[in-house]
Image 1 (cartoon, chains in turn green, blue):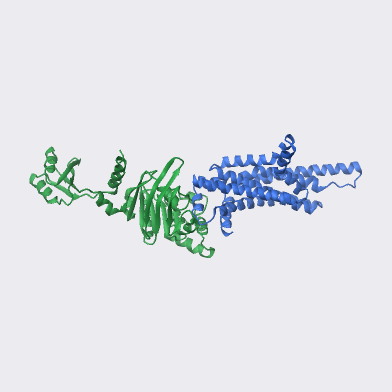
Image 2 (cartoon, chains in turn purple, yellow):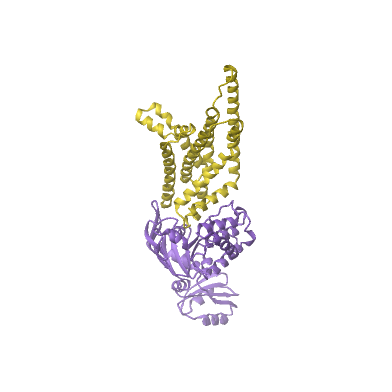
Length: 311
Length: 255
């Protein structure tokens, strides 16, 4: 559905993105992940035909983003980083305007606007002036604007930025609901968000793709071995030594007092041995569990590897 | 055509919901009214004196002595007012990042520009219509000639078109409304007085400068003269301004 090949964009001498290539299939929910200034917004701007690329090509549903921009704009709904809201307009009028801009015939406009208001739970505020709404509602209006013409593809640039935790959860829920029927590209620098919503992640760092994969694949690929957390009641220096002496254990680190992270070889399956050791020494077992690598670890690892690579 | 109207309608509704439009219209009407009152006052004094001196009989020309100067003064007030109407067109969209909504919608850039041009034109035409009470009043108290009044309004509207297209160009250059207003005011004033350079320059260049000046062409319309050369001047001026606006906005996407 979306094919990006060797896409580059430079602002003067500064290269924002370099040779990006990736594919997105119909119905996928893909997360763009990267630190601020990595080139996420630039990529999204190019995909939504707002700015042309310096070189390379991007095709959406077979249309070229440069040659056939008008066709593509009918297919996508775009929420830029700053939602494009006219602060002096009433929510209902604004959505009507957005619907008309997106070629919805005037007879069907009312229906489309009513539906999108329902979908984004804007019923309570549809008669209010956008500038006076809370940030969370403004973001919802921004998403509603991208949805009003029921596009196949939704491009959402940092949809939860600047919201409070409750609003973030609401927006996430909304995006999850939408993911059932739309292809969604979502960008974020907040990792848990991507973990919750997206099936596949494209990690961008410094304008280049650091990794493209499904979340599970990324986690397994990068987890070189397994990791266990051991929490006990006692604490002394001997413990680390004894744990390290176990077979198949690579490193032991004391995360907090009486709380250890044990890294071991792949498929070591040594929970039994650790438990036995703890019981034998009467350290007082509180907790023993496998720790799965979070996206945060993956991300850090990838971007670090990236940086260390050329040096 | 439909898309142009969608953009224009949105701009019009934001004009009418903002205090800017109402304050500009008030200032325009007050200044215009004050000037009209004074011109009319002067005219009645003159005709009174003329009657006394010559023993009556010769009526002074209402068109030449009241309507023509009124139009000229209106042109000056519009010069001050129009940059304030056009300044927000693109500058505000860029500042508040709402331009992305228009750019990501399936409409052409030229439709956006013409839509905004249309909105500004409608707003200013409305102001001019509101000030037309003065002309109506003249029809009630006297018998002015209709022809020059119609061509006069036509000339004023065409000149407005030129100001608006320059204003849109200025607004496309920046995301700061004040800078947009200053540039457009500077351009408008310059193109107004460019003919002054004619005296100092040689015959060829002098004629060119004379031709470029907005005010020379307006004079013809106020006298009741509609010539194709003036029409061509105004229309090409407007189109050129809109074309430049299109170029600026298109190229800013590449940067």
